[in-house]
Every structure is written in C-alpha cells, then in structure tokens.
Image (tube, rainbow, N blue to C red; front, side, top):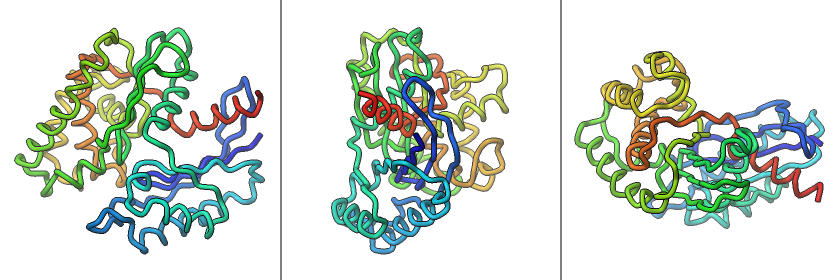
Length: 304
C-alpha cells in the first residue's frame, strides 16, 4: 500500500510517500518539503495571518503536485503545534481542506507523543524495555515513556526550539541576558518532570527529532570522543560554543542547515535541561518519529 504522509508542522510542510504493509517497515519512496516557519505568520492575537494561510495552502498544493505521479493510495494529513495553538485554527483547517481537497486533521499534543513513541518502540524493539522517548519540535516538546507500545506516560509542552527562540533569544549572537532568561525558564518548566518520571531507570532514552539528530552529528564531528549519540558531557561542551556564535557561524558548522541554524541553540538548551533534570547520561538517536508512527498506526488499523 502506498501512503502519503502530509505533516504540516511549525517549521516545514513535509509530504513523505512510503510503501508499506502490516508486518514490514514503511519503505520511503520520496520526500517533498517546503520550509515555511508558521510562527512568523502569527498576528498579535495569536492567529495565523491570511498571508500565512496562503503560504500553507500553496505549499501543500505544490507538494501534492510534485507527488501526483506516484499514485498514492491514501493521504494521511495532519497538523501539529503551530496550527493546533493558533486562535483561528478551525478556520485555517477549513480553508486548507477546501482549497486543497484534503482531510487535514489537527493532532493533540498527547497524540503526537503516542504516535512518536510507537515509531520508536518499533524501531528499537522490545529489547529496549522501559523506554523514554523525547522529541523537540519547532513548537512543542513531546515526551512519552512505557514498556509496551502504548506509553503509560505521555505529555506535550510548549517548549519547541522555534517557539523558545522567538520568545526569549535576542541579538546575534544571542545576548547573555536572554540566554540566562531562557535557561531559568526551562529549569522551571522541566523540573516537575523529575517527579512524574521518578520511577524511570534513567538509562534508556531515545531522541527522535531533527534537533536531536543535528546535535548528535555536531557532537560526532566536533567531539568524536563522546560517541554517536547525544551525551550530557558532549552537550556541556557543545552548548557554550553554540551560544557564542552568530547565525552565519552556526550555519557553517557541520550538519547545521539554514533551516535549523536559527533555533539550534534553544534546542540544545532544552536537550541539556532534560538530561540534567531526568539524570540522563545519553540519548540514543532513533530515525523514526511522528510520520512513521502515523503510518504504522494506520497499517495496524487497516489489517484489523
């Protein structure tokens, strides 16, 4: 079965075409992506502007057009944090669905966490046991934990790297005052997780987002002694270096794209605070995330 997974996120609109059937991993066929940064199209009331709605619509139509020759059997279209939290979310969804002739659905934060956890569980396998999954997106942070396919703990927090950059970080390079303000805010918001996850064994965490993949690649290139995953030791060396750089200098670093450069500092700060609060020494990188979780869930349901 050929599925199209349309992910309308905070930073990008991404159409991934995959082939799959129950009992086998989803096989990527093609990928079509538009960088949009929806948070730049919010007005003072928190609504997405008409220009932003037009950008969403045009990007979706462009991506669908580029994939129309692939004969997709079913399109799974979903929106995450940026549209979910917009004051005019319902109007945006109604407009996009009518203009693009699709059925775009808004995922709740807990649904994001659950589907991402499913993807990580299938990728890492049952031998990974009691698993903690972390995903730092542009608008939100998703956390899920459990020993089976359905997590016993799942939450979504408004701690996305793009959101925090826009709210807190000023200057280029970022000012020490704004960095300190964000550090204190993260400590306050993340500290309660220690109690919620107090029974977690603290040695089996996975990161699924582009933020974690970028941090792992930076660590491998700049500090190979720390290995291939994200470690607290590596972040303690990497983060001060990132904080000193301006955006052009960050873009010159290995593995940091123009899309990721503006928000990688905030993303690294979230990652480090999570590791400190939850006493995590290492976060393994899992290449599967929300889109794969959506596909796996759909294939499971079809075969029932």
